[in-house]
Image 1: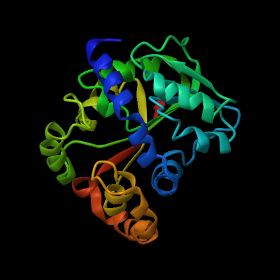
Image 2: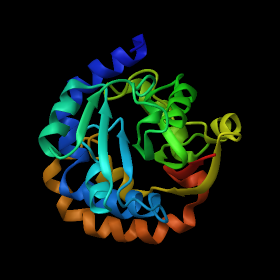
Image 3: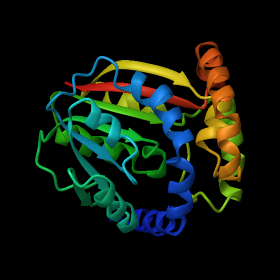
Image 4: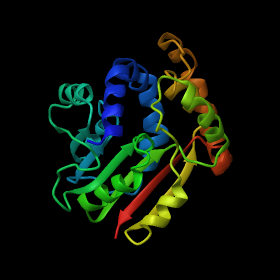
Length: 249
């Protein structure tokens, strides 16, 4: 691990329990399944596929991948995350390693999933994508969801992140157009969607907004319904995240 990854590892270990409590409660699970996983993996055949839940934390994508018949491996640099992953998903492999140098052989996976991990890696996002390209089989699919640069929510993030101890200094939204330009000869860009509004903020990101966990179940059904109505209308400029499928050439 490089120095920045060591800082991220220590940072995540410090906030791990609060992070998992807010991002993996029943309300956040409902949000991810509806607004991340179903559109993110739409059209991807996962039955009997070797899939990697990269930068997995406690395995937010693993449960969905298993329901689709995939054989799943979790990868994370955090000891606390890997320990929880092994307890939660004993049927899966869990590897503590860097996504920049995973140690997996070439062409090991048919699918790699990343849920909000790339924006923790600056300035190493291209290096991470190069490694993911290496371990994907030809025709394999990278599915990811990340905050993206250039939106109104990103302008707020750029002011918020440096002032909030929940974020490391290198965290920032990904420049999707820049990385697409770098990897246009190595990936086919199969899908690119934008989403995230009121439920993304108040349900999924309750930790960032310091919302007590006990309040979430009262407002989650209403906010999920509002977001389902708003998301198709927002477009790139007003959405909180981008959701992509890339196919290895």
